[in-house]
Amino acid sequence: MSKQALLIDYEFCSDCHTCEVACKMEHGFPEGDANGIKVYEVGPWHIEGDKWQLVYMPVPTDMCDLCADRTAKGKLPACVHSCYTGCMTYGTVEELQPQMEKKTRQALFVPEQ
Ligand code: SF4
Ligand code: SF4
Image (cartoon, rainbow, N blue to C red; front, side):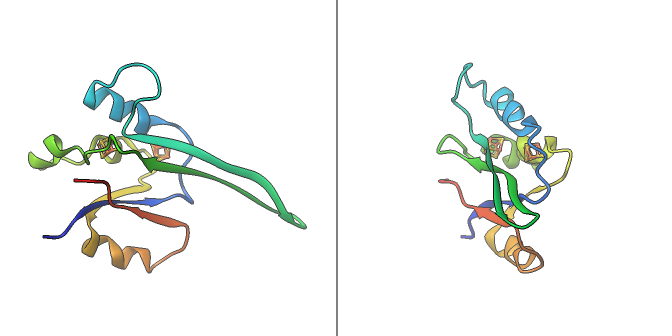
């Protein structure tokens, strides 16, 4: 059976942390670090000349169950539903793989299911 996954286009993540809030609320995680997703900042680093590296990378944690209760009802995972930039996509690995070939700065996560 095909595995479900999250495709994250981190070029367009704005570091708003809405996905973290949505995940915490959906699952009732306690205050603190416990969450199904964390947004990390990579950089800023000077590469050369006027080129710098600064990206925000949302990473599902081992607490992510891909919102099994929601998706069983045909809903999108809470983080995907709430991401206003639309930089997160939910689907099977087979569905998402062609999207990965269309552009750079994307990451495919396949949480434990
Ligand atoms: S993935 Fe979406 S909701 Fe999460 S921090 Fe990035 S832009 Fe915000
Ligand atoms: S899919 Fe659900 S459990 Fe996983 S990070 Fe997103 S909101 Fe949290």
